[in-house]
Image (cartoon, rainbow, N blue to C red; front, side):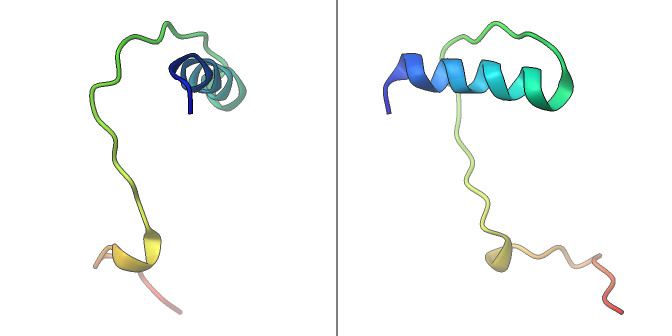
Length: 46
């Protein structure tokens, strides 16, 4: 994915999800979350 495309997607998601406009700078880190591998111990199941 091109850098510009990632920046535009992030800007759009911030507006859609929290209603704010952001200025996107350089990428500092990436964290991938796969739920089935990282279920918190504090979840309560019925």
